Length: 466
Image 1 (tube, rainbow, N blue to C red):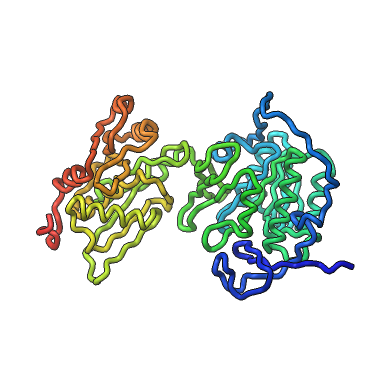
Image 2: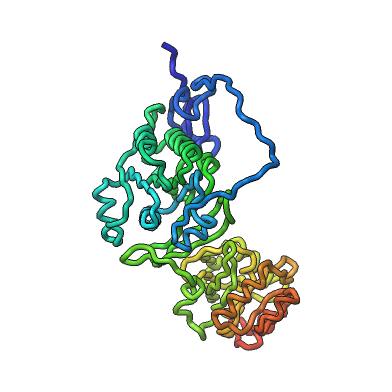
């Protein structure tokens, strides 16, 4: 009998070494390397499974094509993120923190599809069938014709899926609980996750069913397991949220059949997740109109314009090293804005404690938020409330200029829809200027800073600095 070969795999990053060592050279984590067999199972070495040397069919690039058939759930926010519904024969990976609502979202989408006459199979590896039924009854979905199974063995799951009519949608909750008897390692290890995901992805391509895999995330917010799983699937969605807020955001970071960086907004209620069709009104809810340090940012998430409140607080620091606390934005980007204000605009702000918050718990990464952040900082520093009916967007350059950003017409249309009257931004196109809004175009940040500071009263401690 041939001796089984083994390798040593890091359970944090998936790096493979020839011998055991205490620290992974790839990611730097300690005690994460585990010995696993490599000569069996899907994805093993080339000698493990013989293909027989059969040639594959070659087809020309030119020719007629059919648009990808989609399974529309009827949930507008979910269909938006997926690009118009689940594509038949595709594999999707949905990740999120524990308890964020991944299973609730997928159970609601499964019930919605079942009510439209689709064949849906929900396989749970974490809960028993009775537990899934209790959750469905609590959500008012107890009568939906969704087929359930509680199983973790990949071979049994595939045999069950191939027995009977092909399903339209298969939900696997979760990929970290699955195991295959072709791999000699514990469930949740890198090899088991990779092998299980590859087998289910192959089933999706062969059968034409849409397969949704649920994945847990690590403490860094990344989906647990090897990154190769994200390369296997056709779409990767992250379900984000905060325990202190009721809304949840489904964000697409990879989609072969639609736009990336698209978001869908949901609100968690007693009856499950409800769609939020006007997210801008949600993020501006309970906004203090006359408060200093509050600016409304006209941002873009994918193809969707959003109005978001940015809050800033500038307070005198009793410490030698002032505090910098940022929630929902890039802290290094804040440092850049502060440096431009100090160097290019002559604003002495660096010696203060600075707190920046994106209201509602939303996380934004768009450079167009620079101008709104700068306006909020100057408003707080000079105790000057910004106009309550104004929005801000624009990218700040290191030279102190304000650069124009894309999708200006969409941002202006969203602001006008919610009743805003004024806009402060960089240069706009001639077509955008006819929006009916009072548009203030700035080419230099110092010009906008002076306009805001002229309406306020600096603090006594900073009076000599202005």
